[in-house]
Structures are given as structure tokens and as C-alpha cells.
Length: 291
Image 1 (tube, helix red, strand yellow):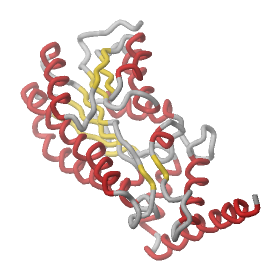
Image 2 (image 1 turned 120 degrees about the vertical axis):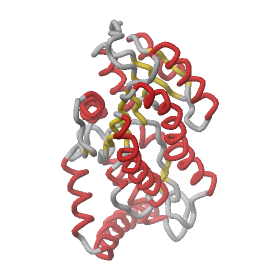
Image 3 (image 1 turned 90 degrees about the horizontal axis):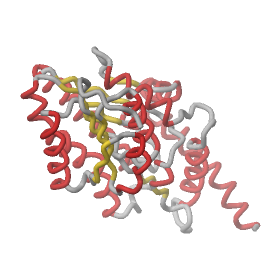
């Protein structure tokens, strides 16, 4: 168990049950920060508690739980020194067939919940005249791909909110920065959903291709894919560096996709993605029929 150094700012991280959130919490614990790791289910972060973290049950869509948790931390530390907005969910499917309740879930977690917990910590941060907010976005907050319309829309929304917060809070001594990684080999993809590849329909070939390619991209060691630990190192730097960058884009693939999209004509981008995904999907569908 790591010993906390109470001269360091307190840290609150959402979505610590696995992947990047868990890896980042471990870095803060190891460095001696008073670390508050949160997740929707407490048993999912029991390992972090054993390492020395203070664990909290926070579902970011439960605003009452958010304010109670923040108040408890502030009663001990005065204010939260570093907030890392990491909790998110992702669902991949065409806009025509995505269930509206799934659309709402993504916005509730990725946008509304993130803003709610940010609002909860800000009054005490402003009073203290210091603080750091690190928003975990996505390279998909800068471009859109077929089937990613809703998930990437939530990350576009975060990009906009991040930029507004950065300007609004700087006069109060609060720095805001954002991490925009590409593919991460973690349970995030497993915890999300790819819909429409099982059912025969207009989008089956597209979704079969997307499921195969995205699943392959989330495997540890895949070309251009970073581990949660690698991305966590970048996030830790963004949270603790005296003068953080406005945005961090870990990995070559994240940067390449963002800048390629800026350069490439819209319809060419569409054609390349659709051709690649449906070509793969047709092969899979043909093999399924043979089986």
C-alpha cells in the first residue's frame, strides 16, 4: 500500500474499473497523491483500494451521488485539486437503427454526467484559486466514421466544452486540458457495443466489417494501438505538469487520422472508410453462408 502525501493535491478519477482509468489511478497512488478512484460498482475497484486509493461509488448519471462524493472529498481537502473525467461508454451502429435509449445513455454518461461532475468541483476550485481538469476525449472528437455517429458526436461535444472551459476557468487559476487517444487495448471496446452485424439487413455487411476491424484494433500489440498504461502516462503528465498543453494526442495513429481528415475531401474520406469496411464485411458474410 502506497502512503499518501497530503501536501499534494487530491485527485478524483471517474471510470476506474478497468483500462485507462485503473492504470491512471495506479500512477497517482504510486506517486503519493491522495487518490479518489471511482466507478459504478465498488467491487470493480477493490484492487485499487488495496493499493491505497480511497474508493467511491459514482455513477456519473446520478447527480446526487456526484455531489455527495465531491462534498465528502472537499470536507477533507478543502477542494479537489485534480479532476480526471474518464468515464465513458461507446456504441457503434448506423444512425438509422441505433435505439434511442442507447443514444441517451451515451450522452448521459459522456456529456451530461461529465459536465455535472465538473460543475460540482468548480466552486471550491475557484475559491482555492487553483485546480486542474483533465478530460479524456478521443481522436474521434475530431473526425467521424461510419457507425460512430453518436459516440463521436459525444466526443465532439466534449471537445467543444473542453475549449470553453479552458478559456472560462483560466482567470481563476484552473487549467483544463484534454487527452485525445486513438485505439486503446482495453475493456472499453468490450464494454461498449457493436450493433447490427448479427441481423440480416441493409447495414449487415458494413457492421460485420466494422466489428472485425475495430476488434482487431483493440488487441494489445496491434499496429498503432496503445496500452492503457501508455495513455495513462500521458494523462498523468497532463494532470501534473506545471504548464500543460491544451490537447494531447497519444500515438501516431491518433495524430495521423486527425490531420488526414483535415486534409482529405469529405467524400473521399467517406468512400475510403465505407469501401474498406464493406469489403471486409462481404467476405465475412460469404464465409458465414458457406458454413
